[in-house]
Length: 507
Ligand code: FAD
Ligand code: DLZ
Ligand code: SF4
Image (tube, rainbow, N blue to C red; front, side, top):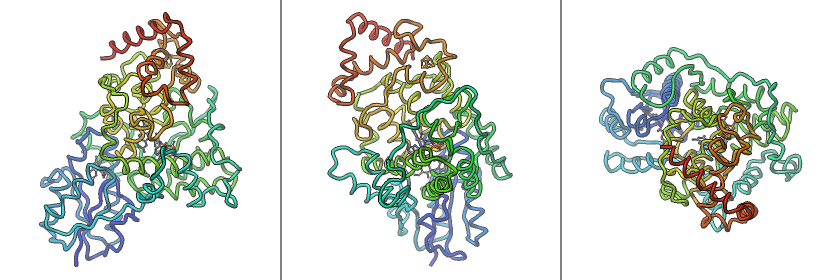
């Protein structure tokens, strides 16, 4: 009995559930590069190159194990262009008894999968994705009956469940969360480790040529492609992080430095999200570094919380709330995404730098995404659908299950507080405190109003004023609204006027 086992481009793990029980010499494994996936949004070329190259390397590894792999390259003359058409073609060719695959990471694809059994006339077995540390049922059970979903409590349960950084039933070091120790800004003399670098091999070079030829009209550059594209490379990237960056990761986790896009972050999200790394191995590698005194607790806990806490939490929220989550827009924000998100042409140095880093690397670190690109979209009232699409396009790690809750919930507060207890809104003061961008900006971060004033300063207050109906009852914002009320009418009017002038100039 031959099965056709379909493996999607973000399922490149040897442990993927669709491969459980797969028989070399009997089953056919199937991967396809399709233009529909590369263009349903116009992904950054580096993201497409990463996925195609990693798919080709994964197919090579599976063949080396003795499997028969049916692999369709994007430029194969008979490429059928979509998952459904490619699968129909493979079914006609192999007449399998059954199609097996692991559930998709995105709602859009999962909906398509559900049509296949009927349309193709072959039984389709869809297996759960077991690469996460909380099952979807487990998350739904945890969430049920709670008025608010807070990552911190979910994370504590996950620490206990997986016995991570636990010391006889208590959190290691006595505290669950060491965020307070993770807010330093590096000095100008601080040195930074070079990012992990894999030179393109023959397979990657062929993919780079293909992507250049077919997708050069997409936002972003292919220059200096240096990502790992297979399991061995991704594991080496993780080890590089543990050795060089983890000991300082937490301390400067929230800092932003001009010309330093990588900082002390791990740069492993792309590998985790396409299956080249597993979350528990990253967590265990960091925990071991703590036990061996190779990294301090604030850094190790900070890193582990991102993977065991945030990553699992946002996935749970996505599947709990889709498809309605895609339409969330608490503030009724309707403004178009400003052109500078694509061109980088803005006088605001912080945003210009982040767009440039993003275009160059298909990467920006968390605080750039949240407190600059996201914060600006929040304060300016940009349509959440346009913001989501931008974030899905530009980052190599962007898959909707993780991108959407981070954008809709964390950055835009568009879900009305399901994911975050208050909006991550900030004025220029925060950006100045955590970065050196303001030193080289044409705006003055100390000025609150007028044409030279930092736009974040007045937009911040204007955002709070505009959305008072939705926010003034939030107890975490009580003091802030009191400060606004204490302002003179003249000052309030200046905030309104400056915001209107600035926002009108955007498009
Ligand atoms: P590190 O800072 O080194 O963190 C380690 C790992 O923790 C990451 O690799 C990632 O797997 C995980 N992680 C950290 N923060 C989060 C988070 N908030 N949610 C989920 N996982 C997290 N992450 C994505 O993987 N894909 C996205 O499309 C994505 N879009 C985002 C959009 C916005 C507006 C914001 C605010 C955050 C987004 N994130 C996204 C989360 C986070 O910014 C990235 O995971 C992180 O920057 C990746 O870089 P890194 O591997 O160097 O992470
Ligand atoms: C992102 C992406 C791209 C650009 N191309 C492909 C592809 O050609 N073939 C493939 O199997 N997967 C691709 N992917 C990843 C898929 O979009 C991803 O597997 C789904 O979004 C998961 O639901
Ligand atoms: Fe950004 Fe304002 Fe600082 Fe300029 S002054 S870099 S706009 S925060």
